[in-house]
Amino acid sequence: AQTVTQSQPEMSVQEAETVTLSCTYDTSENNYYLFWYKQPPSRQMILVIRQEAYKQQNATENRFSVNFQKAAKSFSLKISDSQLGDTAMYFCAFMNPRTSGGKLIFGQGTELSVKP
Amino acid sequence: AAGVIQSPRHLIKEKRETATLKCYPIPRHDTVYWYQQGPGQDPQFLISFYEKMQSDKGSIPDRFSAQQFSDYHSELNMSSLELGDSALYFCASSLVSQETQYFGPGTRLLVL
Image (cartoon, rainbow over all chains, first blue to last red; front, top):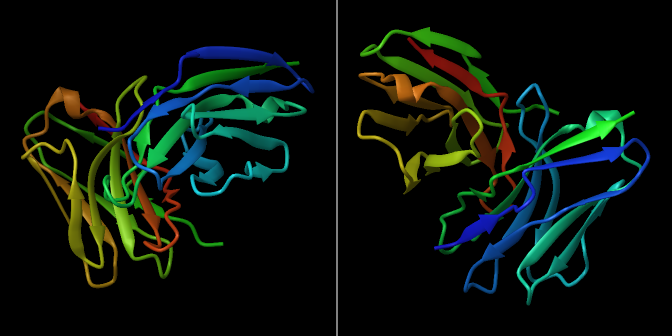
């Protein structure tokens, strides 16, 4: 069974600085998808970024980028120029269309606080 | 752009009562997923539908059932509610060919 682990329950960063959130996963599959979702205090689940395992290039979305290390099964999220609005719970998620039927398997989450 | 719609947004029920949660996916999305998020927990998959057929089932209690209708909206029916069913229930939708799931705002269920 696939598992996702986020080893940092809480992190904090000063506004305008850079922070990296860690995520590791376990799978024997070769083709899968990885996601980062953000859950602010409103508790809405917002897609931040997605990575296809077959792509070697790391995904980037504005201030958000990932470091995808397939061999190490690592998928970290880097947030540059942190803003107060980035304060939220961040969930890493794994999906394998073939074996998991498309369902997302989430990590435990990392609560990020951006301080002014 | 249209998003996933869930209703109601908040629901308060007594133990042993029944609740029905509704989900309206993004137009043209063919797949619907239901997740349950307990306090301080990550979302847990309950059930999914593709083209109105159940496609996968997770840790969904037998007291819960769900279906997807001809207009692609989905309903999660919960009977004999227990205190432990208090949670945030998310619906997400996707195009099966695109793999990315978009979440609705959730329904907060409180069982007293």
